Length: 630
Image (tube, rainbow, N blue to C red; front, side, top):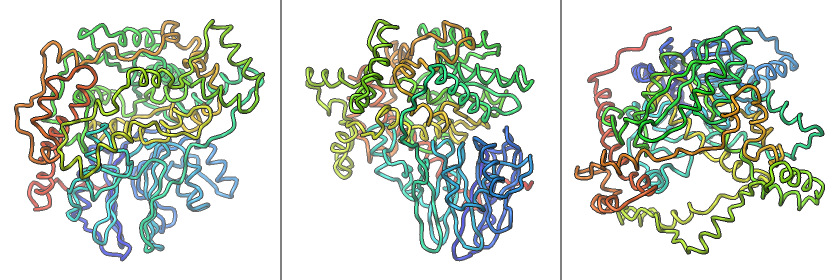
């Protein structure tokens, strides 16, 4: 969550200190607890500090062990004690109050690049070797922390904040048409390395950047492994191991001070809240956990608030219900320009920063239940196929037969059969929901019709037990979710942490037999016995009962303001007249898809203002105040 930015030159050019001060000022919203600026031969760095924990903080960066290798970034490690033991076993003498940054530097000193695959947690950071003139940048496995970079002239720029890179005068604001085309087709870009700006790149999750006199290389350094299934003798062992891993994941993310939990009335986030409060009690921090829930009553009969209250009362934590009923689509977007570094097709975007603003009053860390659906709703069909191929008849009988005996039904196969049959019977047109309102020249130039068909095809997966879940976890879906919840998009000093996406938890779940343990979250339900009220523990997965967007449009509360003339940039990609006609006849879920053109037009209005603001800074007008030094 702390802010960082820097730029290096292999040729040893002196850094522009004025630009460093501007970047530091642009990062102040991330780190109110201190600002530090550092300049050396061929390198300049700035850092704004947010105090969170639970590990001892490193309030000033860049930091170094020897004055040669410097670390700059946002680092929160999991499994600190395991890493400590590994380093001590190799001869290191480590103080008890060692920071996460100090652990990374010592691991790098011992093993170099080989240490990176063993790092777990939420992080994005840069290592600058001033003697070798080499920069190594790293982003964690799930992409929980953002990282952007750009190469311009003699410099390589980097930061965890996209808009701060745009302060550099030699980084252009030319748009990436591939990114915009993907956005208009599916809300996001299928290439994890692209941003909406052609000159600025995104470091994908689980990747590292290596920059030296030999050039620039981006490569994957870690991934979720595919391992043999875990066969345990005693059923209770599956539960005990999962409980231990989940508690470790929450404990490593739980600060010693006030903590928020973004909690719905479902199983995942309430489980995180229950475990977090249990650990807080053990630490003598009773009362430090507070839950925050969004409820849409009276817009419709939303049950989330009701079940969330039941869980909060049982766990023993206060809860604050945030009402989403009164928010209209695109409400407040005129004031949200700086909070949209890239196009965003979320008409209710205003809710996010306002909810985070409520959280910020209580805490700088918020836990969430993200990740529970990927593996804890396992597929029976791939597992059955795997057992047949392995000739495990006894395992088939015990797993599937036992499931049928206990529940009087076969486990959910989730093999995609219904979808295939429906498509065959109805002869669905794969182009039925294609956005016909794209500008023909743009559509033809990027081959968007062909790409649309490619995007409809399911991604292949090598995982034998959890093919769909593995695809979701190894794509850049979660990194894009985290970026939408990042301080650059919320404008608040609240850091989001997801225990169910802990690398240790994921590796374990990827080995657990899907039947019975991950059918309808059976493993999690069994693990939460006594920690959650039965009505919540046994509640089935419930999607949002109704769409607020459709309700507001159906009641006439809101219609797209298509009478306005969009910015000229938007009309290069969207045929506005055709979009207006299409939206008049749209219904159901297609409305949301067609609003991508509207969202893009809104973003251009805000992006133009942002560019103008940066231009004034470069000209010396309305310059930000100079950064303070810690």
